[in-house]
Length: 225
Length: 405
Image 1 (tube, rainbow over the protein chains, first blue to last red):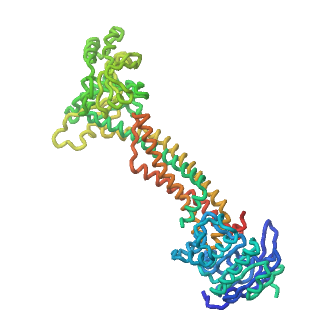
Image 2 (image 1 turned 90 degrees about the vertical axis):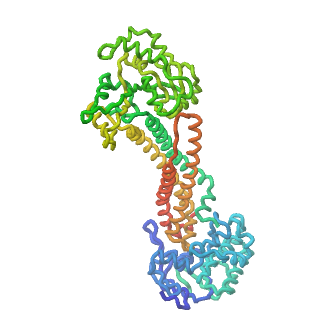
Image 3 (image 1 turned 45 degrees about the vertical axis):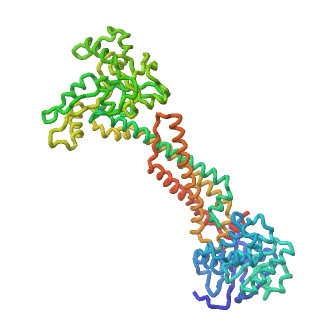
């Protein structure tokens, strides 16, 4: 498994069609995409153009109907489901628009979860990341007692606690007011700058474009050149 | 951070509590049924072992528990007494017992009608706590014997009721006396006649209630010298033949009498064998109750899984494997079931206390293996109950699960 490459994402001619009740709904029509290590890439485009589908394919949450996807040089399409799950756990962090925190766990519990899934010992990474995002004092609170901005920061902390090679963020500020969204984006940008974290973020927020290395626009299942 | 399984169960306290309670009741029912049946049978078997005899002669093909009535006619006793092995007598004495069922101490009791002179064999070293043995029985026996013909029968109409009534005496054991608050001199109407309690013996003797056999034979069998069973005291074995003496004598006696003859030591097994149908019923009842409990657990875990579809999507997105999800779900189920088992054991001990308080004549004995069985069944049931929900959880498409509302 060769991972010694500068390309974190190398997707070529990716097609995807949803099939439901005998009806085919093509979503991606031959997407080509490369992202270099350390890049902060924004993916923009109208709703329904296939951004989230592409993100899920790049994050190994689903398989494309056709095309090849390499993550850090590894052809993830040839992997078994279990191998993809392990690969995702080791190298990819996800941030969702709806935060997707587990309500039964505290903020600390949510942040520790990826470490627990990897079988890592809890030697303070969670506390370190919680301090970094300024929420260490709320570590023992359940998500429902946190503001939505705080919840998204916890979700971000959970995504980066394992120091992934790739961060995939699906409209992380979509549910936030502009002030809170700004704070979360600042945090994302800081994380990118301080850690060199390769980031692909879906957003509708054009104001953030200035902070990104590249802005890609997607329309009708293709990335516009 | 508590495990995800514990956190989830704590998050749904009412549902988890009800599930634990369901398992507790099932496990408690299982343990109490086992403890009650085996405890009572063991206690009866132990009491029978206290009789100073080596062999029991029972009606062929009859259930030991329900042995009653006059199964053996007057010819059997001399037949047993004259049994020989290698042309040598083997029987020292024969102790006939006639059973009947009466109500005393708030529940049914087996009435042991015995000859007064055989009482020492039944005491088996235990002492008379208060009162005396039957006084009038001997006089009645002599009176009846004087009336018997060559076959041992007499005409009951010629016997004065007053003579019989004077011999209507009971000896009871101290446990029954305590439960019924019976004291010496207390009179109880049994079989249409007034019986007076004249003696209280230390508990642990074969029967809880004894009366003179002549009285019961007169009332029930028109005086015919019939018996329900016999205890047989054997003569000492000839030198060098001590090994399996009782077993070998039992074989010879069985051939001669065509009855069921067993060493007294086998009485416990006979009881258990006779109880097999009831055991089967209890096993079925316990199994059904446990199955219902585990269906409840399955339903609870399955509901949890369905409700947490989104959570499983999140876990999958974070890199949780199917094995991890199954482990979490099995852990939840095991926590519910093992907590239920612990609660069941506690409930069973509470039930034991209550049974001993309100039904003191019943014996509940919890052997460690019953408790282990309860825990083992709960553990196995917990794992089985989690298999299907666990499998379902691994089948969720993570992307679809993430969009689950």
